[in-house]
Length: 453
Image (tube, rainbow, N blue to C red):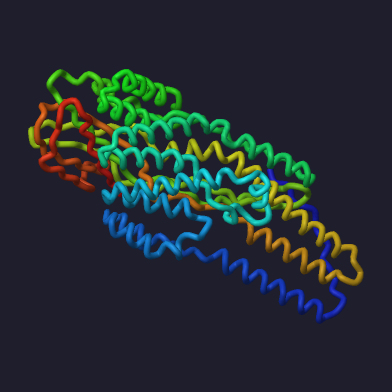
């Protein structure tokens, strides 16, 4: 229930000139706020169009050509990861590895910023700081870099990346403790309330997709005990996070480590759709005898037409890929763990900005000679608070939304197979044909396919 604020006395201007100047300044400030609030240019439009056409090589080139317009100096993480994903999809695995590794270094460097520097973002908004990536971005970059290493024939490098991903997942629950403590101390020092975030945190510290790739990489390297551990951990991951994994364990998982003697196994991993992006949610709270505006980033899903994926081999066998990990749900779960930081900081920052407006308004009420000046300053500080309070909507745009997996035991030999993406009405969305692919025994035969529609 919202309680209306008490009525405010209207300042009386001493001269007509003061009144005229007041309205000039007020109109100018209001125009600036409205103008910049209405500018909604999508700098990614041309790249998104090429991605929709699945021209990943051209989309990576276009991103590079427009990088100085799209990314500021504090947005290097976005540049490295966006281009790293597009080059991965185009098959430029060496370049993708280099970019994703650079992005990871930037994330590590930016997150290590001191608490005092983090507190500095209270003046304006979070966009003023170096972007240190969202947790899901930091996690999934290792997964795709593992695939980069696999495609380049470096199984050891692939396993290292999966281990790095699992280590990051385990540390998520304690990652933000120090920052939250620092913000609460800052609130106390500035005599403001310490807000609590009503949103429940979804715990997520184990990825079925990471465990799946770990199982395959270990199996392909002959490390069967480690492969069994990851096979079991895959089941645990799905069981422990029902809000993330609303799917069951794919039926193919039980056969991954029981390949008959003399047979080979073909595995397919299919990525589908595009992961959520941030949009802004504006909320107004009644705090300290005034309404304050807070702007929060919320994860918004991007619709996908893909309903199912099927693999058909020239030998006559066929099988469906089954959903293993809803990566969009992982995005939401890991972002939920950062909401405490964002919410607390945003409320404290907005409250501090509101204090300035209150001070000027009180001065205008009791001043005989500078009533107009204090009124203008009060209005100006209020407009500044409105205009500067914007959510940080930066995020990587080209991660997929879902991961599907499947596998089949075959006699060693050469195969041609087609992977078909269907919508919910079984209409074909996209086809990927692989010709004369050697499927060998006692090694990993993994094919990666992607359709971001």
